[in-house]
Image (cartoon, rainbow, N blue to C red):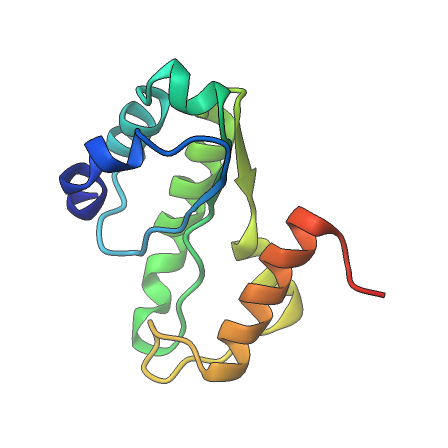
Length: 127
């Protein structure tokens, strides 16, 4: 959340873009994120397509975080401003399968799967 806050003014200047926000598992305080996202200026929310991605699952020694991640994602999905789209990459990865290198960071193939999921969610599947 600190990264977003440190770049808040520059982010709020973006116009006529698709803005995808995919922050990690480092801080799972959904109320802080909801205040931040829902507090974005109307000019930003009305002039961009804003997508907030779910925090994605962990495995191995970090799998204990998944219950907190699910609660975080549910709070975001239910609490975001209607102008912000919630993209549930967590459920996609659980359904599709995923691999990590250390429980937190994904394998190259999983990163490709995430990219394709986001792309297909925005533009539709390639034919």
